[in-house]
Image 1 (cartoon, rainbow, N blue to C red):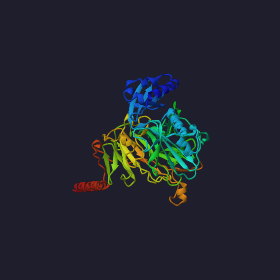
Image 2 (spheres, rainbow, N blue to C red; image 1 turned 135 degrees about the vertical axis):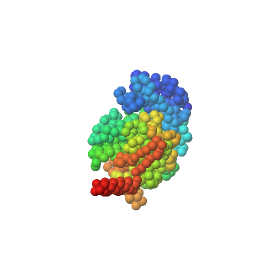
Image 3 (cartoon, helix red, strand yellow; image 1 turned 90 degrees about the horizontal axis):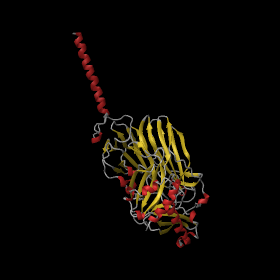
Amino acid sequence: MMKFSWLLIFLVGLWQVHPNGSVENVLEHPSVTDLLDVENAEIFQVVPLHRYLVDGVNRCANPACEQTYIYDFSADATIVTIVAAGQLLDVQRIENATPAFNGRIDQMAQTLIANDPAVQEAVGGVRESADIVIMQMQHPSCLSNHLCVATTFLTDGGSVWVLVDVTQEQIVDLWWGDVTGGNQATTSEASSEAFYDCEPHHLVRGKWKLQYRITPSDGFAVADVYFDGKQVVSDIRLIQWEANYVNDGNYAYVDYAGCGAQGPGHGFPIDPVGETEINAIRGGFSLAQDFQMFAWGSFCNYRYEQIYEFYDDGRWRVIGQPYGRGCGDGRYKEATYRPIFRIDFAVNGIGNDFFQTWDGSQWQQQNVEAYFTPTALTNPEGRAFRILDENGTGFEMEMGAGQFEDAGQGDAAYTYLTVARESEGAFDMPTLGECCHQDHQKGPIEFVDEQDTAGEHLVVWYIPEALTQTKFAVDQGVVDVPYCWTESTTEYYPCPMGPMFHPIRSPELTVGLRSAEVTQINPSLVIIGIGLALLTGFYFSQIKRTDEST
């Protein structure tokens, strides 16, 4: 399929929005053309970029840079370019990754679905193409290395799912699902208004200093976080949400939240709604940002919220909570939600950090990139991992297990440790890898290649999951409370997920961290040592008295 003509058409629109011609120059740059099959490539997004560090200096603070996403259909790869004042700062190719799709793809999929006779028969007539909500989907019927999108209709006989292969530009699957209750709104019945304040904001509160912003597609982010004058993290973001349906197969909508809708030509984002809230909480404060589909509260309309908590004693927590309402049957066949958090650490500054795991009795150094399952061992305080600098200061990571008094039922999280690389999250990420794996083969596994981690700039990826519990299931006595579920816009039950980080209060004596030789103080030996010191002092004092008396 020839995409180059669409590339040129899209450039015409971009030229009107970007009169400096920087995007056109990028597409002519050999560093870009060498990375893609031009005849099968298409620009998906052009968005502003406010933060891009080069040697510790933000090259995109003022004015913002231009970040362009180009999708290579022939290889299922994304090429990302960053341009500042007409200069190409960076270009990266990311395999197995798909950026948010553009308006052409949105309209093409809508038209295919609206005009398809099988779809019309299934849904009971012709649906207006503008009212068909298109979202990215990963499904077994989608060929490997192909991009697919889908929509879900609510009918009197159940739900109708339609899958479009964008690479081939054709409908490849249609199937039915059961539904109990709910209604499906059209785009003209939007229940909320998107709010776009995507500029970075600076905040100083108590001993905390940080920057926060809504990103184009990586949700609500915080950056350059300091506590008591010392840096904690460089950047935290939520790359994507997966709403996985496993009862009638294994497929998922892959959602992104952010300000991407501002870009010229865009697919379907989940928009920010309302201003960022800064709230006082017990012992600290929180930042919260809401994201909602246009008709949240109706069938198959998602809502997600991100929260960051910062405490006066140096603790901090990262939270994502979905609300539903999913696209399942409203009973037992509903979504399992998985957010992908990316936490870019900078303990006392970027680099020179170390990662440790608990082995059941003591902390052990982790010297290469790795992944960890939900059954990772925890110390008596419930903490499985530590991120620290060579002086032994840093944080212990406590995964959610229902202990945070926020109605969370536990994270069951997979954790991934990688070395920070420009192409692995230094800027807004496309959707990662193949969805719906029930084991460790999730998006960030693409970045785990056993590179040495000791003393490096480290990134932790955290993927928890929560299974929907509907009100119907509660009424039937199957579960105790609703979870990840919206009954209406006034009755909803979010499912908070995310880890807590605790400062290492009494840094142990650390020797040779780079060689994984960690010496810990044994309390029993300390007591024995103090006792010996006292006895020695008593002995010499007695000798001195004896000498004086003689």
